[in-house]
Image 1 (cartoon, rainbow, N blue to C red):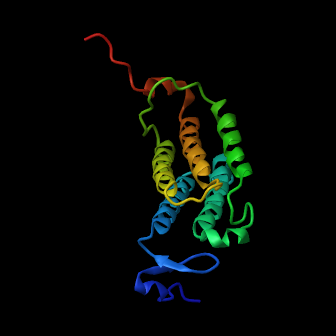
Image 2: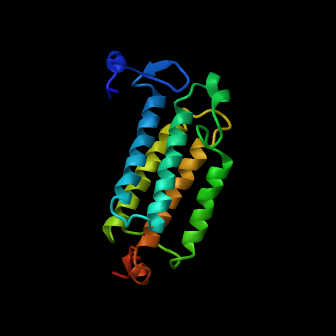
Image 3: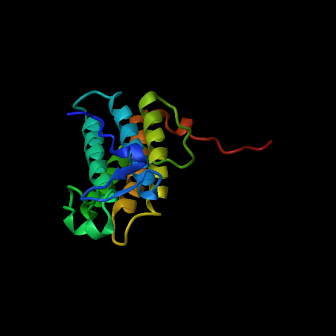
Length: 185
C-alpha cells in the first residue's frame, strides 16, 4: 500500500463517506488544526513514562481527536452515518473531560494568578498543546453544525491541558511561579 494516491494533486481532499473539498476549505483548515493538537499531545506523551497515568490519559485524548476529526470530515448530509464515540463526539466524551479536570484539580493548590509556562518540559509542552487546541477550537466554531459537541469538546480539552500542566508541576513551588502582583514602586 502506498502512502500517496495522487488524488490530492488537484488541490482537493476526500471527506469521510464521500465528497471532495478544496484543501483551502475552512473544514480542512479546522481539521488540520485538530491534527496539530493531536500531534502536540503526542509530543507530551513522548516525554512521559509509558504506562503512567499521564501517558494513559494522553493516549485516550489522542484517540478522541480521531473521532473528532472524523466528525469534522463528514458533510452534514452524511452525519446520519456517524457512530457515537467512533466517528461522532458525544456529550459523554465532553463530560469525561470535565471529570478529569475536576479530579486533577484536587491534586494541586488552587492557582490564584497567571501562571508563567515553562517550569519543566512536560508542563511547557502541555501549555503549548493547550494553545494549539485553542486555535483548533476557534477554527471549528466557523464550520461545526448545530448540535455538534466538537466545539465544547475542544473547549474542555484546552482546560484539561492547562490542568494537566499545573498537575505536572511541583505543587510546593506553584505559587512562587505565578506572576507576582505589582507592588508599590
